[in-house]
Length: 144
Image (tube, rainbow, N blue to C red; front, side, top):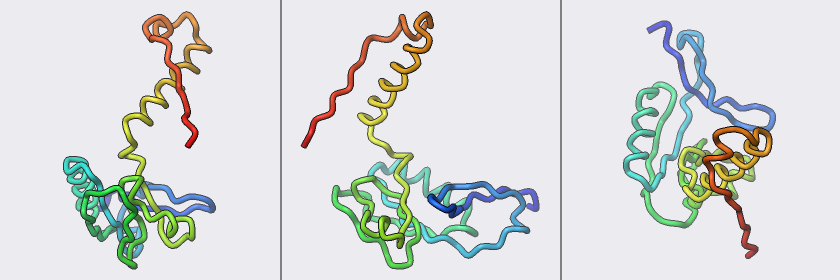
């Protein structure tokens, strides 16, 4: 269809971001090769299905879906969509590879963020329902 919206990786001066581009007829870009490697089979399937819906934009290579060590994706890979621990950070930091692990952040990280932002909100709005319904939370950082 002419009115289709395309999800694509857009490169900016400092970051790469996922963007939407309307009307596929006006958008011609070579396919982006993505290395998809998530632990959770359920999440892997959802992400894979979304990339498959955009097969004209992405070639997806799947990884083993297990392990705690960094994995070097194939040389043709432009984006590694993986668990944080398995991203090839040396390639990312050298600019040879882009990476995304945002959608699979670990539960403890999310809890820490929730505690942090809830605390900030409560300090601004002390009379809110959130202030009276939320138990005090503290975050402790352990130095290695």
